[in-house]
Length: 151
Image (cartoon, rainbow, N blue to C red):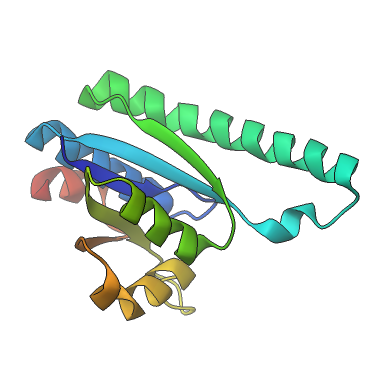
């Protein structure tokens, strides 16, 4: 089964990427893999404190994921998979794609403010020639109705 890989982070545009991935998966019989990455700099503390912080970060991710997962299950009939990795975002995304041959499309949300589309979109489009799969970039300001129309 082909999976749409979507990155779960704190950005606003993540919402449209999640919607797009779920709607496309529902219409094509695919799946959704939701990847969340914990940056390594969050744990540069004493070992015990770092472990507590790591556990708290995982818990926050799981709660955030469950909001999207419930919507995907209830509204789209898609049961997403959660993947949590630790490290720098771009190398971890590339590693996940390399490790899971079922991933067929990377879905990213693009920011619409003056800062540009966001660091992940910028870095991954620069490296897109090295990817083994296509990238779909979903505008963060696209309406839910427009998303439904194009998926």
